[in-house]
Image 1 (cartoon, rainbow, N blue to C red):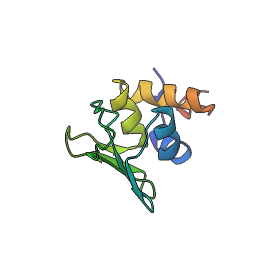
Image 2 (cartoon, rainbow, N blue to C red):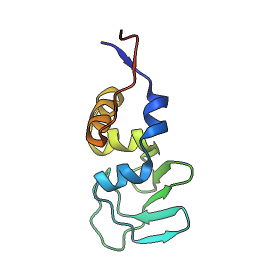
Image 3 (cartoon, rainbow, N blue to C red):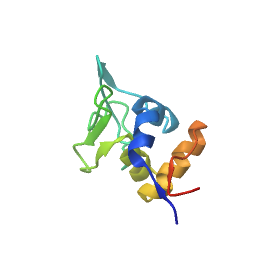
Image 4 (cartoon, rainbow, N blue to C red):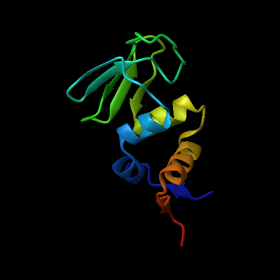
Length: 104
C-alpha cells in the first residue's frame, strides 16, 4: 500500500472545511476560537461547549472525551477511520488529489 504525505493533506485541507463536512455548529465563537458539541463523541446539546477549535492553529480538543489533534485527526476520529483511510476520504470529499508517496 503506497504511503500518503499527511503533512501535505493538512496543508491543503483546512479545519473550517472539515467542520463544515461534519456539519458542526458552534455554540460560541471568539476570533479564531470555536466551542460547541463534539462531533467525535456525538454530544447533542445546543449549548454544549466541551469541544474547542482553534482555526488559526488548525487544532481541536474535546474536554469531555479527550479527543484532540489537527484537522486530519478530527476527520479520522469523527468517522472512526484510520489516518490513512481518513486522508484518502477527506481528499476525495474536498476534491483534492491524494498526495501519494512512492507512487509513480
